[in-house]
Structures are given as structure tokens and as C-alpha cells.
Image (cartoon, rainbow, N blue to C red; front, side, top):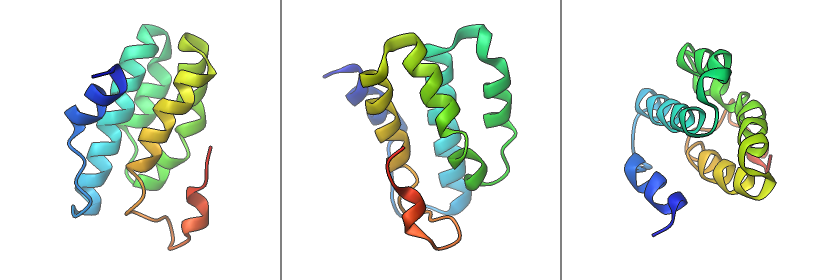
Length: 104
């Protein structure tokens, strides 16, 4: 089992949960990424993630998260990581427009 598989297994994705539960699951996933790849230098991004009140706020933090991972591990690892993060948003469309959920 690779790092990616074990990372997503820990989060236990469940598509039938409430928006609040989804918000917390996405927040936790993003915080784990910051902790793993960012260290203490990225406290601002961690704070933005921590204080997001809606899932839409987390959606728009994905580019910053991708930059963090790409700087630490390279573009390929960042793309794989963000594919997993993006998948967590699938059942929780922002404003009913699924087109916003395209690739990063």
C-alpha cells in the first residue's frame, strides 16, 4: 500500500454525509497535507484552512495547497494529492454548478 492509499484510507470517505461532515473531512485532509509537506513555514495556509466556514472556501484554497506540495515533492506528487482532495468535493457542489469541479 502506497502513501497515497494509506492517506485516503485514514480519511474514510463517505459520500452520504452532511455538508458539515464533508467540510470537516475536507478540512482534515487539507490540514494533513499541510502538516506533511509544509511544516511550520506554511502556518498562514493552515490558518486559512482551519478558519474556513464553508466548503467553498476550502475549494478555493486548493491552488495554494497544490503549490505547497509541488514545491516540496514535485508536480506529479502534487497532482496525485490534489486529485484525492478534489474527489472529496464531488458530492458537495458549489452553487449547483458541477463545472467548477474540473481539474486543477
